[in-house]
Amino acid sequence: MKHIDEFSRPEEYISPFDKHFRTVLRGVLEETVMLHRREYDEDWKEHRLIEPAFDRLMGELGLQKSLFPQDHGGWSLANSDSVFRIGYMLCEELGRADTGFAVALGVTFWPMLVIMVEPYVNDRLIAEFAPLFCSTNKAVFAANAMTEPQGGADIENLGLLKGKTIRTTARLDGDEWVINGHKLWPTNSGGVSKLFGVPCTTKPGSADPRDFAFIFVPADLPGVTQGGAYEKAGMAADKNGDIWFEDVRVPSWYRAHGPGRDAEAFYQLISFGQVMSCAFLTGAMMNLHERLF
Image (tube, rainbow, N blue to C red; front, top):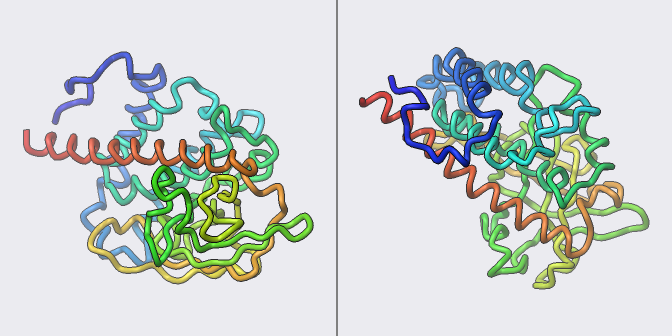
C-alpha cells in the first residue's frame, strides 16, 4: 500500500503539523473506521459501530476541541496560519477512511469557523461554547443548519441569490432573537447535534446582506424539534433529518457578528466547505489507488 509521501504534493502547501499528526490520525482511523466501514450501511440508524469511532477521534483524540484556544482547553488551531492546510489534511485522511464519517466530523467544525478564524473572531461566543466541546471525551457534534425544503443548499450561493430564498426568520425581541423555520437535511441533524449554526433572515425576501443573520442555537432549547435520520444510499455515518424552530429564543449576542459581518463571515465559511469537500474526495481516491496498486 502506498504511503502518503509517495504521492506528488506541493510541499509549500504542507503545514508543519502535517507529517506527524497525519501518521497518528491514519493509525487511529485504520484501527476504528476502516476496520468496520463495510458494515456502516446497515448501521445507519443505530450507529452501534459508528458512534464509538466518533468518540475515539473526536473525544479521546480531541479533534472536536482542536479549533478552540488553549486557555479554553483546546489546541488553538484556529489561530494557526496553517488552519486551512491542516483542515485539508484532516479531511483528506477522514475521506480516505470513509466519506460519510468525514462529512459528519468535518461539518462539526464548519459553523465554529464563523467565530474562530481571523478576522471573524467572537471571543464571547468562543468562551460560551468551549465547555460543550472541550470538557468531555464523548463526541459532540455541531451542524451548519443551512438547507431548507424549498431550495436545498441554494442558501450557500450568497453571491447570486444574496439570501433571498431563506425562509427561516429571526426577529429581535428585546435582548433575544426569536427564530422560526424548518431546516431539511443538514449534516449532523437527525438528533445528533448539540449546537446549530443557523443561517436565517431578519427580513424575508431581502437581498440586503445586512438582513442575513447567522445565529447559534443550542439543540436542547424549548421550541427546537429534530426528526429522525433518513435512510440513504451510503454516507451512513452522516445523519440527515429535519429541524424545526418554533419561537425559539436565544440571547441577542448569540448572533455571530451582526448586520453585514454575518454575511461576510458566512461567505468565507462556504469557501472552507468547498475546499474541504475536495479533500474528502481526494482521500477517497487515494484509498482507491492504494487498493488497486
